[in-house]
Length: 234
Image (cartoon, rainbow, N blue to C red; front, side, top):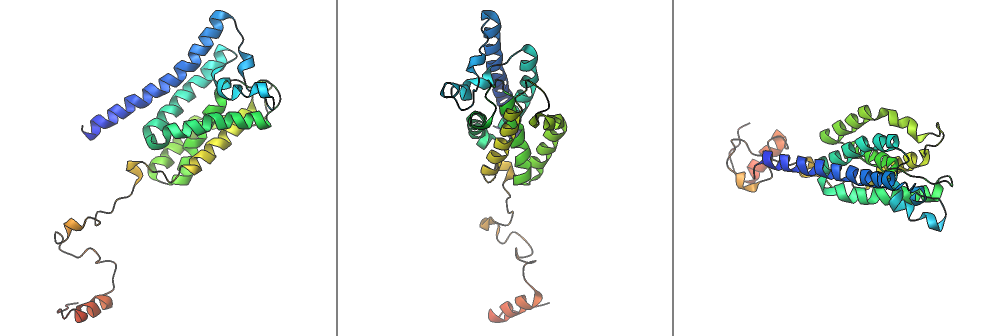
């Protein structure tokens, strides 16, 4: 399979995963709309044992269509970007960000039901941003800049500025995403690994100059030549 074909396959796979994530929260909301159930009790209720289940179910529940729509696009975009550009750690990062964000909300947030995927979204966006800081290669820095431009307005979401908004989920999700990006910073993708064109020993003798031509001084070369009884021209 050619590189172009592999890239297309990877792109389609990443998009499908993003769509699958969005499809799950839409399915839950459609079920809620059809049945008339509120499902709010499946949210995270901090420091209560019956609220522990919400760590896993809370992000799937949304209060309204507007709430659902506001989370759907960034969830799709961030999930797709991570699975395309950080394939090696994509699932692992999601499996850390999703429950850890919920657990921190359960530990520290106000004692009300916290619902919606926004905490996970903040975690995924923060992961992409943090990868740019910690990996420090061109790809990760550009991706960090892209999400910064697209979602700069999300910064206000970590502050208690609006009634009825779980700013704690936003803040703790962002912190979780940054921590996970730091944890996985050394697990590099194939295109992030620097290769040395001189490293292949089989290329010895194929070049006019020796491979260490810029690593040694003229004096060092003279001494080596004398030691090997080789004529030296400098």
